[in-house]
Length: 329
Ligand SMILES: [Zn+2]
Image (cartoon, rainbow, N blue to C red; front, top):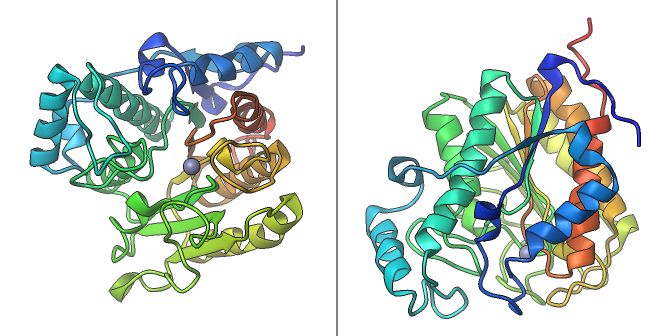
C-alpha cells in the first residue's frame, strides 16, 4: 500500500474508538455495536488507517446538544439512560443503560471534526458511527437518539457564524430529522437522494418538498424507486451539484448511509460503493471550489456489514486521494 505524505493543511481525519462503537442497540440488532469494527477491518485492509489521521471519540457537553435538542428531551434521555428501560420514541428506538453517554459521544465526535475543520487543522473528516438523521428536536426516531447532523448545523451557524451550510444525504432513508428541522431556514442547503417514501420509512421526502417561506428552493428531495441502481443515482447527482453551486455553502456535510447498497436487509435500493465514491469525490472537488475544502462525512445507516465497510471505505479513500486544490497555488 502506498502512503501519500499529505501537506499540513490537507490532513484527513477518521474517528475510531470503542466509545463510538457503544452507540448501538445490542448484538443481533441491525444497528449493533459491531458496525464500527466491520468498517475498521476494511480500512486496515486497504491501508487507509496509515493515510489518514486516526482520532479518538469525544463526548459532547449538554450545552452543545442543546443547540438542536430541547432541554426536556435531553433530560428524558438522561433519565432513561440510567434505567435502560422503555423507548425514546414510539417504539423503534429503545433506551439502553448508558444511551445518553453513547449518543453524546456521537455528537461530540462530530463536533470535534467540525471544529478541527473550521480551525484549519483538518481539511476533510469521516465519523463512521454518526449521521443519525431521523432524530427530532424533541424525540428520538428510527434508531437515532441525538441528531448529530442537526447539532453540527446549528453549531456551524451559531458558534462559527456561517451564513450557509450544505447537507447532502445519500442514505436510503429520507433525512427527515434534518429536513423538517430546517425546512424554513434558508441557511441550510439540503439535498437528499433516497428510496421513495411510498415504499420505505419514514415516508417523506417528496420531490415537491423544496423548503418553505424564505427557504423555498434551498432544499432538494430526489426520491428514487425501489431497485434503483448506480445509473439512476448518477442521473440524479448533477442536480445536487447544481444546488450547491447555486447557493455557495461555506461548509459541506455528507451523510453517506450505506443502506442504499444492494443487499441491505431493511431497504430496497441497488447501489454499489461506486455511488458513494462518486459522491465523495465530487464533493471534495466542490468543497475545494466553494469553501476551502471543508467537508465532513457522517456514516449514517447501513445494516449489511460488508456493505457499510465498502461504502464508508470508498468515502474515506476518496477523501484521502482527492487532490487538495486551491492550496498549492
Ligand atoms: Zn438509512
